[in-house]
Amino acid sequence: MKLPALALALLALLPALPLAAPPPAATAHELRVAMLPPATPAASNSESGSVTALNDALTRELCQRLAVRCEVTRMPFAEVIPGIESGRYQLGVANVLRTPEREERVLFTQMLWRSSSRLVARPQTVERHGGPALQLAQLSGVTIAAERGTQQHRYLARISEKQNLKLLETTAVGDAMRATLDGRADFALMPVRSAYFLLQQQSPGEITFAGQAMVQDGLGGTVHMILPKGSDVLRQEVDAAIDAMRRDGTFQRILRRHMPFLAD
Image (cartoon, rainbow, N blue to C red; front, side, top):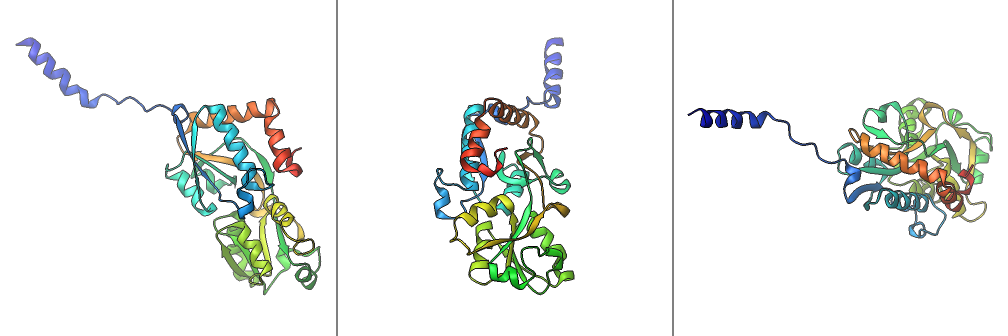
């Protein structure tokens, strides 16, 4: 009777034993990646100069070095952080500024580059409101467009009532600039890097920068890829791959090809 009793005792302990941990995400064959859609149809071409083309090139190189197949899903910026936070996606490539609030929600890779924000508008609008040296803090009674979910959008929402500003919310950064072209907004507030690309797609003199670059109140800082909380192993592997890309010059070559004003 001792053997059956011992076997039963061992079986009773089995549910309490910890289950084996799943393998790290980066050791899988597929990585679910959340990325921004192209700002314009032309930007879907990987050869074109655009933020989309830059992110595509970096992601392809990263996935190749991690030896995984990346399943890319395109979505508005406002959906990227919630998608990563929920674990539906394992990597977010969307030019995400690092902020204390976002650090509570997701993990950040090493810095990719630095960013700031600027206003853009039609030249006649700029002149009407103070000229090239105008400041956002001095504007009142105007409509400013910004992409939903971005730091620019959050900042404008915070100051709009105090400064008597009307905030026009858009689903993409390109839509914010288009709002200034069709008269729905007086200005658009966006990341400088995105603005450079979008300005290149306009006719000369159609849209211009207004005021200086801004970094205060979360409008500037370091840009990163993001991952779900708990993905420390994957983050280490992504960072190691980015380090390798920098060491052999691949990272710099991609920047010079798609974002020459960033390749310092």
